[in-house]
Length: 166
Image (cartoon, rainbow, N blue to C red; front, side):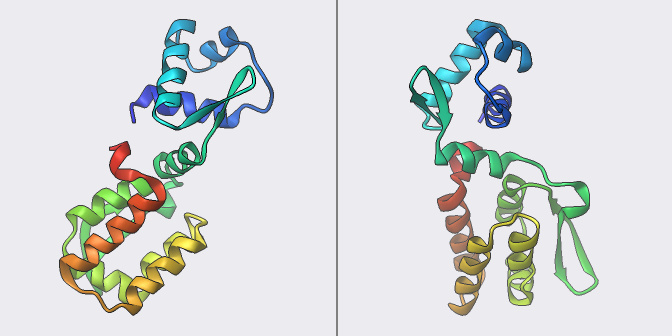
């Protein structure tokens, strides 16, 4: 998703009442025509839907907002290879987490899943107890290596459509 599209989607999600196009365009720092184009593109991609004379955010749009929104820096997930073995990778959003899972070694993924670190981060930081439960289910399957990474990536993409956002 392009930065301008995200900005438009976020502004629509934060709107508490109807506003005319010029006011909205000003709020997102675009011209009226640019705002219309962004809204139409978001609707075409399924992030928005037409409701009466305006637009509403779809579930896909809500998931995208959640995936792309950054958490406070103190809530970043820091990846480790083991106890006292930190990696350089961290994630401050679901999008960054997804990218990090693709990059980090399977050793790190297994370490964090076995300890419940991923599950706790999704429950406490992401406020997504369902994903935490799904990760527990994956843990119970005793998958290892690339099969484990693939299953986690599949879960994340299925819930947040991350592959399509990147």
